Length: 413
Image (cartoon, rainbow, N blue to C red; front, side):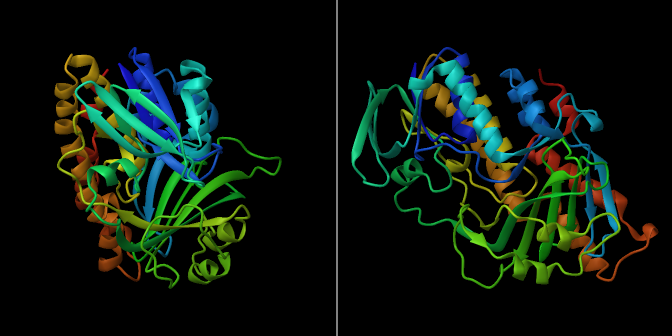
């Protein structure tokens, strides 16, 4: 089968590798003219690492990432109330990785070039329209700067992996409208600094009114013993500007953030100093999603990743769910001789699964325990006041909804 993929991000590139390995003729068309290692840190949970392992990428991932050892939650006073091991340290068959998004994308891009050939990946090609009939689908691509049509490609299947502002989704759902803004703004940065806790810990601090997420994304240290740390500040309402959609490239001055986090200094982490040490740019990210759809596939066209199910970046599930889409789509295309049957099966499995995650993330996902502790103990707590069983119930519920409860996942090959 000849497959056209619009979008050379994480979902599109994993799809290209997986579908090529399954014997399909794949071409990837990426909107940006030069693919660079942009962005900051993300997490890959064990359920998607399983898929990447099956694609032969596990050792490549280990070389550029860090295996997360533990997840901890603390209140704004720096008191811990939840700690759990992660990945192989929790008994999963597969690790959890923290990794630089851009380096991960470049790994996938280079692997796709190696497997598919350089002439199968096309940067600078933004999809503008398509038409389809019983014999195939034809996609038209433009230069985004000039809006001139520069290429037309014919195939058997078109996959829209072109992100939250997907052009293919817009063509399928012309009346959907803009993204839904949550009212929360994320500020992302990296700092080279002294390691904290296990040197491979992920920490959630504060509440959803004001939160800080911190984790290393390199398992290497400089001559001073410092490590590359990724951080994400979450502020309700942001720093005061009116925002409605995602923009990875908008930078902000650290001064206002420093004022917000000036008192977040603990014996295990100095948040203000971490922000001060961030010299590679701080990027603003209005937290947005879209309502789940009841259909992704229309004849020879389907959606994948953020184009299909953009969700709040809570619970480390954005990239992971896109990779799970790839796994299911590949399996369905292998299982059915009929394209329509394969896409119907893909829709029936992944739409329900991802909609649950979208809705749960809107309900704060696993981070609901941050607000629970802030509401009950705004001035701090004593160790015997921590509701361990209640917190465990909430955390396990999210793992099952997102598809990485240990028992179910470890039973898979």
